[in-house]
Amino acid sequence: MDLTESPEDYCRAIEAYLCRKNDGHLIRIVGPAFDTVCGWASRGVPLKVACRGIDRYFERYYAKGPRRRPVRIEFCEADVLDVFDEWRRAVGVGTLVSAVETDPGESPAARRHASLPAHLERVVARLTALRAGTDRSLDALIDGMVRELDAARGAAKSLRGEARAVLLARLAELDAQLLAAARERLSADMREALRREAEAELSPFRGRMPQPAYEQSLAACIDRLVRERARLPVVSLE
Image 1 (cartoon, helix red, strand yellow):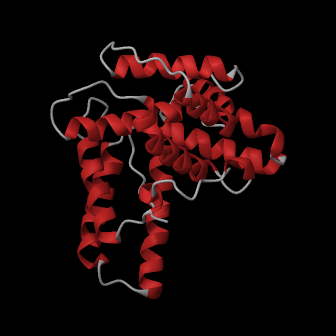
Image 2 (cartoon, one colour; image 1 turned 120 degrees about the vertical axis):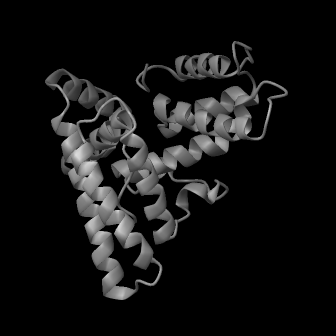
């Protein structure tokens, strides 16, 4: 299902997803909760993005210890809007659709910039974890990146000015290489499937975007889906 369907269908899909996350315990989305979820639909929050926001809330909930009661959808709203904000920035629609601009009260978590050393440490950890998976087709590329990033991590804290800019540019190059390698390993059918999924995610914004901007956002959305499917970290840093 995508946002071409009615807000009611969107709400029912969110309700079903929340039920699964709550181990089958059904909490009806009615009243103010229904208005909240319909608001996500009217903003253009793709269903998959909303589900990732719900997942993010549950990850924190589980981390606190044994669950005591089923989660209500209202508790997930800040995470859903954070993930939506990340998605909009990733695919380039954040400044094009004023009707869905981030509310001032949204959580700043998605907008917080990590330090460069901490970012490199996380990327190295994510890349290292990829080498433990069943797909070993990117091992050679990943091994080289891990060595380079690990070497850069020690000096990253003291980098300033042009030296920092050079490293950030290199991170962008490595990110592009990693994505390109992942795309090359996709079958033609999978590439077409990801394109259709990206078109569905962007469909609420399509009529308001000039063609060049839409094509750019579509390419960015496909890249995000490739990254998600291959479980690749974002190597570049804004």
